[in-house]
Image 1 (tube, rainbow, N blue to C red):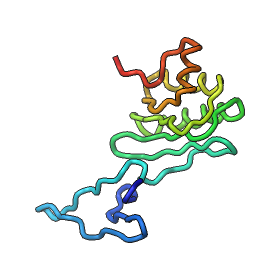
Image 2 (image 1 turned 60 degrees about the vertical axis):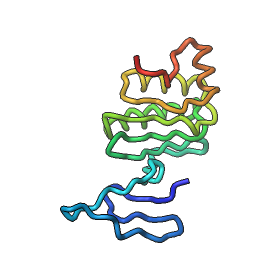
Image 3 (image 1 turned 90 degrees about the vertical axis):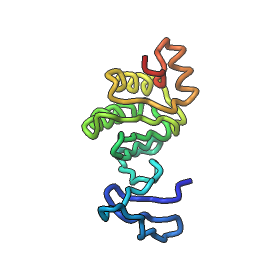
Image 4 (image 1 turned 120 degrees about the vertical axis):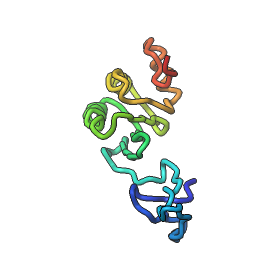
Length: 147
C-alpha cells in the first residue's frame, strides 16, 4: 500500500490522509533529494478504457510502465494493438505489466506476441492462464529471462 504520492518533477510529497511533507533534508548545495516514491504511486495516464479493459501508463525516469487490467479479447485486441503501437513513442524502455489481466483469448496472445517481438517491451507478471495458452500454442513465454 503506497504511503506517498508525488507528481513527476513536483517537490511536494502527499502523504496518505492528505498531509504533505514540505521539509526535506537538504544537500550542501541547497538542493533536496528526490523523494522515494513507489512506482504505482506516480500519476497514471489513462490510455484506453472500455467495459472490460483498462490500459494506463506511468512514466518514470528509469523506464515507463504500461499496465493492462481486465479482459483482452477479440472485441478490444485491435484497440490494444493500436495503443501499444503508439505508446512506443513514449520511451525506449517500456515495461508491460500483465498482472491484472483476468482473461486473454487467442487474439490477445497474438497481439501481445506481435508487439513484444522487437524487444521494445519487457513483459512482467504474465497470468498463469495466459502462460498456459502460450505453452499450448508452442509460443515462448513473455517473461523468459534474457539470454
